[in-house]
Image 1 (spheres, rainbow, N blue to C red):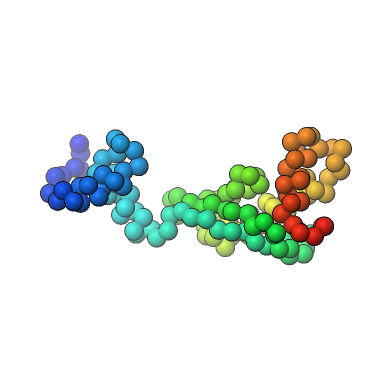
Image 2 (cartoon, rainbow, N blue to C red; image 1 turned 45 degrees about the vertical axis):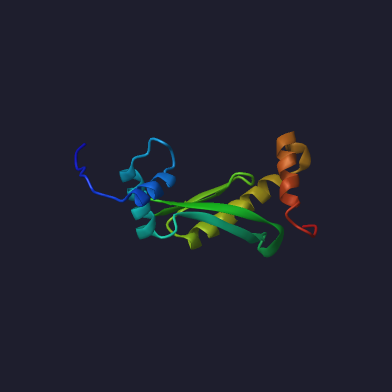
Amino acid sequence: MPGASSIKISESVKEGLSSLKEHPRETYGDVIERLVRQTRGGIQSGHIPLQYVKINGTIRELYHPIDLSFEVEDGEYIIYNNEYHLLVVAPDLYRGLKEINAQFGENWNDYIERAENELTPGALHFRDSLLSLFTEAI
């Protein structure tokens, strides 16, 4: 294996590394490399609750916050929620959340502002999901 070398590690460290394997065939080198990347890069994934959205120029509080997942890959933030059809890639969380809000607004226009008779049964179900996020009628 090019670039590989042997290092001596204690049994307790070896056991600790084994417990951190994401799959059985992952090598100790892979585990160590992943840990180094996470340590240097800070938080690599997490969740953010989306509590407010802007709809037709008005900021509204969600009765049921949307759980947004995020991952950092190659310096870009991937922010998503599959249930509400939200997905963006952005250089930072600020821009990503701004774009998520814009996508929510697009979903609102496509599913709420449109006449019900123009929507499929699946789209009507999604419409109901969007409306259930709010306590008051909009």
